[in-house]
Length: 304
Figure 1 (cartoon, rainbow, N blue to C red):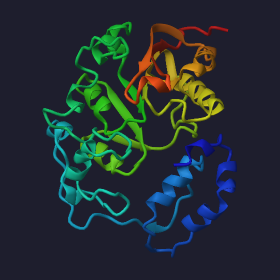
Figure 2 (cartoon, one colour; figure 1 turned 45 degrees about the vertical axis):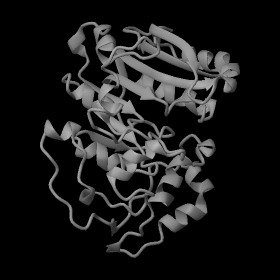
Figure 3 (spheres, helix red, strand yellow; figure 1 turned 30 degrees about the vertical axis):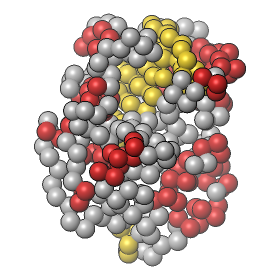
């Protein structure tokens, strides 16, 4: 997906993707937009974010139906009729759920399954013997006082389940996402969560010292350049209020990179509340992959 070509902002990434940007801007004013979501995401993943606004109308689903009201929407799969499917390999939510049975690589292969037997309904709420698996209630219990956690961001929010679980605990979350071969933004919105369509290469659209908590799972890992990760961590520090929490959830890397990544994380200035390192074994021990799960806090007072 060209994520290795991600560049820091200041417009340069758009100039470096001139041919893609020219195609993106080739449309007729006051008409329909081209059906170009894959091109749009390629630009975003290269760091051209935000994209220029356009004067055209995007395609909509042919026969949409009203979404379910809260709280029924939180754990109900939306109807297929509410999705414009042209950009995706799957053309139904059943197909997305069934991807778990295939050998193909897709982001978040099992996270569209909201059934009682699926993995999503257990995530972040079911205690585990694995020390890397923090629960939401465990994390919130470390906040002082507990009710100071009110608003936050789930960076790389998948299908929105983390934000849903936080909403069930009276915490308002925005979930950032991209539509990587699946309608993640529409799915999150159908559940009653606000999807923020942005990449990690962009300065977050929040003012300094405002958020109570930021959660990130997998999107910040060793598939993005280390320098970009450094920029992102400092921007998360910026938007968190003094005393705010950053939950780095299952950050993965190769064993030989541990010193590099630990030093980058520690250089930002967070205080450690909970820090666990363990093996990532799902693709085989021979790859020597590792996880860090960490809960860190922005100091109440400047630490420099």
